[in-house]
Image 1: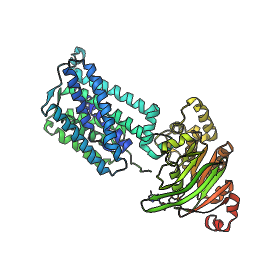
Image 2 (image 1 turned 30 degrees about the vertical axis):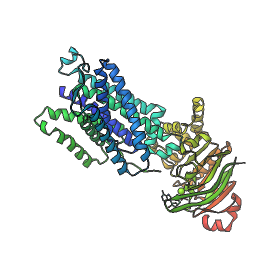
Image 3 (image 1 turned 45 degrees about the vertical axis):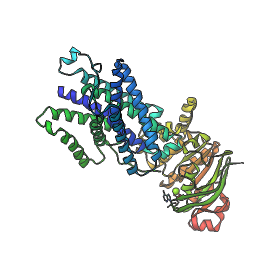
Image 4 (image 1 turned 120 degrees about the vertical axis):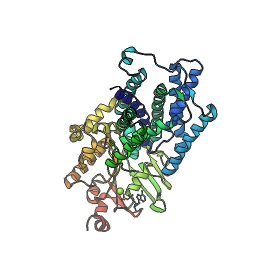
Length: 288
Length: 236
Ligand SMILES: Nc1ncnc2c1ncn2[C@@H]1O[C@H](COP(=O)(O)OP(=O)(O)O)[C@@H](O)[C@H]1O
Ligand SMILES: [Mg+2]
């Protein structure tokens, strides 16, 4: 039971990151491999803000804004000039952006891990902790559910959300309706990066250290989750993320612990063998 | 005055010259048809006018404004709406959401309910299926949805690319009735069809497109009477 809650909590971190991959893929048709590094930038933003003895709430706002702006800048500087270029060129660019961000962090902060600061810690809540669940896990899980619900409502009921679904299905037809596709892509990067900032905040509650490569492992796990769920599918990213989080926690608390990473990635292979489009993915149709 | 004026429009796909500098116009209040065999360049014409595919050269004037370089998503705001070939409704959105997308360019939402009711009155099938995902509609219903979606944007000029494609004869008749109806309500229409007989019958004027060039034009009646057209497009 406790393992399950821990797993759901970790899974909601993966899901938040996976949403960024899947939304960007669904709408801009590109794999933003620098997405994991946005988490890392958010983590450093929190560490630096706290080092000035500012409130953790200030750190939350700083990280959220910085990551959102960073996501939009990455899109504008790195990907927008490549619209219509070959997927390979875009992929190489994405990897380049990822190395750039990691390199920048290393130059500014060094490669050693830096503690985020004692202020980044949740108080004990005896009612929850009594059950063996950490406050961090509970807060992560509850916040994750709230954030994902808001996103779902946004996509389902707002004009922008509807335009995003339209663009993801048929870009040309959406343009004929008057949708500015470039604007929608920018918004998508902003939302994905904001979600990554939240994921970074929760991640730091579990492992309270920053490092230039901090985003790599959660990033690749969340990307795997997005593919398992069916890349491009929003509910798929949520399901895939939760699934990998739960599997990881159950593996870690069993004799299979040393094989956790191998098991997580084997899951990808098995699911793709059974259902090549991922759990909730669809066959894509290409249009002008 | 011409509502739409196309001058020397040229389009290439790589090295393939799909449109070899065509010129034509659509006057306010007309139904104008482009007929031509499969591959003649009809869809290329329609899509390059609205900027969905790039033009090599040429000018497009709409409502007195040069729109040759206007980005595609701004075209609908000017009053030109296209129902593209193959309908391209949003299959994963509901019927109602597709109609909302049709009204995407309308800033003043106060008339939305009235426009929606008008579409549902014109297409009762859509009203019955408004909460259904559009991908589950039949071909005829999808064409109606595509036309309803287009009407939601209040076009001055409605461009229809092969609206009768893939439909049963009964539905084809129904679609042509609807086109006449929309036209009667004051919308100018540019139609592309392989179904030359039916479209010439409702057209004020028509152009014949062959291998990327306009080879003939005249009133609907003139072209229907022409031996060349009869032979090539009306089955002898
Ligand atoms: N995306 C494309 N790439 C290359 N050639 C194309 C493309 N689309 C159309 N064509 C070619 O351009 C010509 C005109 O096509 P199109 O405008 O679709 O004709 P129509 O609508 O009259 O059937 C055809 O020869 C077709 O093969
Ligand atoms: Mg065509």
